[in-house]
Image (cartoon, rainbow, N blue to C red; front, side, top):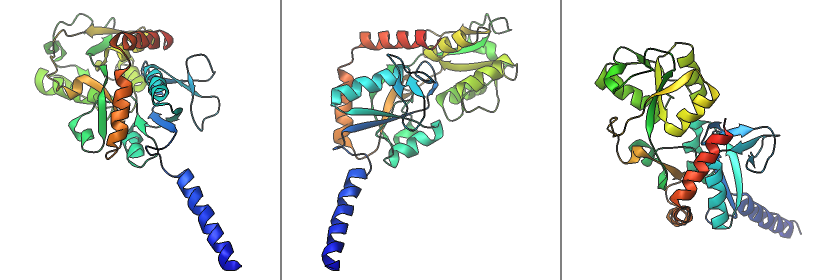
Length: 274
């Protein structure tokens, strides 16, 4: 009897492990990770409304933004239930590699270093980087990157923003200071004169200006003056390596979202993040 009972227990345990195992292609839940601190791509709200989405494991916290809208559309196209988890920037790639999430949709550029760790989808947004500084400061009327000579720049740690500050330091005489963990922290550094400028994507800059009227876009280049690679000029969705079929499915879902629809979603996200 004990042997039979043990066999039954082991069978039930095996079923439970399969049901509770990591995310895989057969799961009906699409788990997306993002910071919820990067408007207009993603941010958090405390009350439910018709556009935000509950954050798993957080009481009265909801995610909103362009990334959230993309996650909804992808989940709908895949016929999966969406789950959103709030994860710090540094933990996003480890989380997808360890099967804690299926996708990173967090305004991430698919750099060569990141491509060594995870796979990326096709572009879900095209990047345009701009220089942001005090509206009434000495950089308010800058005309070229050479005007940054001698000024202190700050970026977000472990992002292309910090790389861009390093670029203008190496090539245009600026001074790079220690990056900070979040874009709001970077904005406050500029406002408090710890730094003179930062470099961010255009939608992020617009969101910052809405939140911090002291700031202004002081330089919006018409060409690729930062000498970025093709990968650095797009945002893509992160996927664990080895999930080729799943990656193809996500790309197919992305292909159903038109450029016009993406433009509208970003405009709405910018308006809502004010």
